[in-house]
Length: 479
Image 1 (cartoon, rainbow, N blue to C red):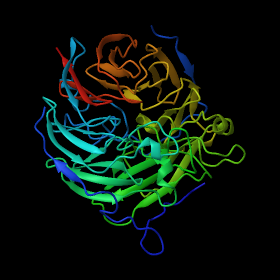
Image 2 (tube, helix red, strand yellow):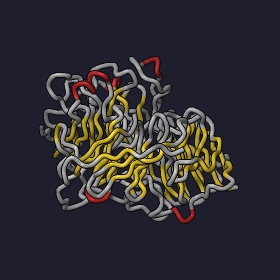
Image 3 (tube, rainbow, N blue to C red):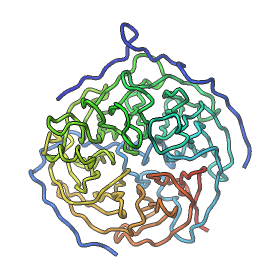
Image 4 (cartoon, helix red, strand yellow):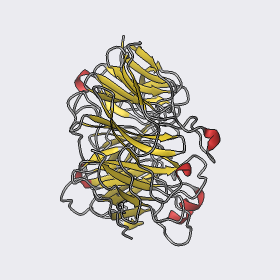
């Protein structure tokens, strides 16, 4: 079914104006310091030609990392920018460690010589790339305490989704959950740390108390896109949402709501993927219905103005809704030739055609892959998939065929990225960074980084691998 975007207008509806809600921000400056056997699946039908392949490299300067997994296609691949100077996996060591005021759940960003990180204490930092010294910090609100929420697993709950940087305005955007609770979109000047944009960005009909903004923000078509799901525990009558605001913080906002009676969260840490035409692809969690299809357990394609264009759902959606084994635990990955890959909680990976997702049961190909959480990385036609029992390699052919390759050690379960000729992924339970051989999945180097949040994913920049931790940011270099 199609569902049109809902403009949030002043006349007769809700207007979320710039600078609405939340405490006044305060700014402070600081100068402190063994492969498995391959599984192959052939496509169920030959994909139709695609007019424009849904892949998109971010318009970021060499060395910058301005969004989750670097580009709008969410490839996690540094080779188009900073791969030539990324840290090599020999003699890894801690280059610096910055202790901040809370856990860094989002992937750190890189803009020029600044590392941008946001904490669950609702503070945004710019760190010096060479030393980790704090250049500026901006506290944008008081976070929400777990004791005031009906469920959840983050305490305090502040900024969780990965931020996004806009080169045109030179603002970095974040969504902060602040006491009340409510959610504010803030745009921070990356040079000065001053707040230039602030507006409430709660969905128009759901109670903010049962919503969580975990998905990475996306930037395209002069808009910032913000997706919502529920809290850990699925309490309350929440829905999956995508909202869009102009980067200047002005004018009406657009919104899309998953048309289930309840749930259908859009929460995967990788957030929406965006193709070269500005279309968004989101993974949606289980809906409430097990009888009439309700839009949950799906990949949804949205236009730039958040009109639903297409949808895919597994043939077994009803069972997946009933057992919470849905697609929404990872975000879609955009491949060459207009193909889209996703793998969720059920253990099945799907290849879809970007111009015709296939409706219910209409995947181009599917195969057993793994139970997956987080965001994938891409090297040529091979995906590196974050599996609960260790990263796997999955190669997708031009016709959509799926070949499952190596399987990394079971503890290496974090969302991977690719650079300097290796796959970088974290053992999130042990707090260890691994450099994996992309041909075999063998761990060729490791480095302890400390306790990390759920679904932690590295950032690559010149001579450094950056990781958000439970108390700040760690930079790994070569000794």
